[in-house]
Length: 256
Image 1 (cartoon, rainbow, N blue to C red):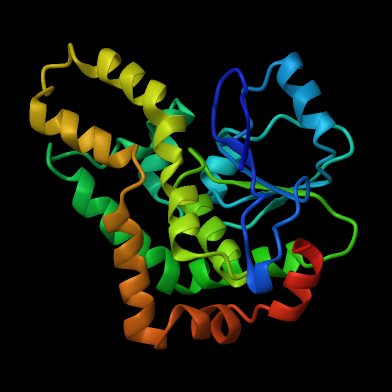
Image 2: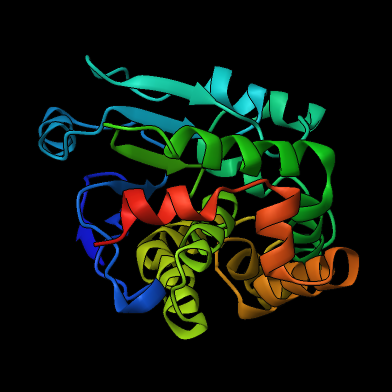
């Protein structure tokens, strides 16, 4: 894993280097994951251009995509493939960062809400369609992709886990990639704690809930995988026969 640190978000990373099927390595410089690219600086843009990215996949809902679009970089094609239904509450959000906080009407909502989101993402029609389209897009010749959601940890985290597992990467490494988002989110969580700590509804319970919302938790991913096993028998069957991933093609493109 190679991390490319940007000014506003710290979750842009190359998925190359992991050991996959038959001991082959995932190629560097072919596919990246990140958070939203709506606040990039000129120096950030230069870093992104150096990666030679040709296409960006955005898993955010249509409202998120419209309200907080990625900064346009010449030469890059943009694909919005929502993996969740729009929520009317998001229309009220002034900040791209606040779109995960609206539901904390009860100070302990965070953990349970995130567990539910993950299950919906992997079983809903819109989620399955999005992840299937993701694999279809990245299975093209002569492309370099970045894919992201809002923070780059949940929707993009699931897509990254599926991608690495499809390439035969071990459970340990695929999970480590998923959990790395916690390092990227650490400063953002501290910023939110400082910003919200003077609100009348602030409490230790709310603080834990906020941390749950902005963290990648093993329980979230395990819950999604358990749902997949229950409904589709196994992750392998899900990837190959529900998402319709051409494993041979994918491995030819991304392993060396």
